[in-house]
Image (cartoon, rainbow, N blue to C red; front, side):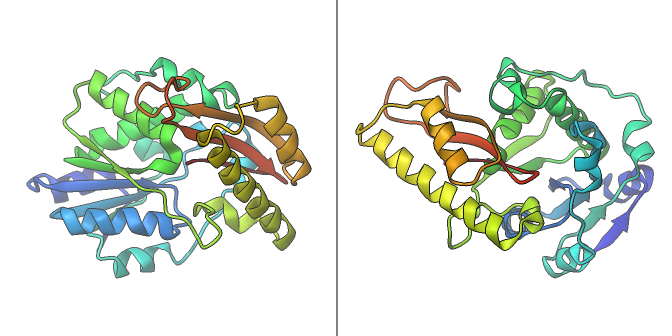
Length: 268
């Protein structure tokens, strides 16, 4: 594996390689990342992984500063047979004029977009810049961050960028908790509360599908607070194709809540 911190050196290295897949990350790699990277390595000639904690997608500077880091990331990527690791500086990413204008679909105003002002603009901006630097054939993204995945895909289509978005399934532990870098910030009691909430939400969805209950956002929010959430941003049901409230019994349950100072998002 070759490490690059400079975009021009990386571009010289990859300019004659056609089938490149790209996996963007913010580091603190976990089994979810591993699954995506393995898929990329298995299906592509070369895989580039980026590690860059993007300050523009954080509203809170403290949250940015507290984002977990892992010194073992590089060794893990070598073990996974990644071809290239790109660890740019802030200036390497942001000190150039992009060709594409940032396109934010109306879907950016729903779910997390209601609560994290400027977040998705920051996400799409940095991914667009990485795509312009690398120009990969494919970009692989996890379904846990479904809203992010959709918005990146819509930006790519709008700007006619020649990169295909590959959607990768969410990887979960034995308690059905989706792997996340932020899990490292929980103590044992908070972890217990997280598992209780996930179990409750799974049962809630089952009851919705069986039509034993109707969706009541306010009632479910109060229940999550009782189960240990510090704050609940939303619990919503959406059809994955229309991105609207479902007319039929096909939907995912989307939610975002805080345990302590750690925010979790997921959907299933």
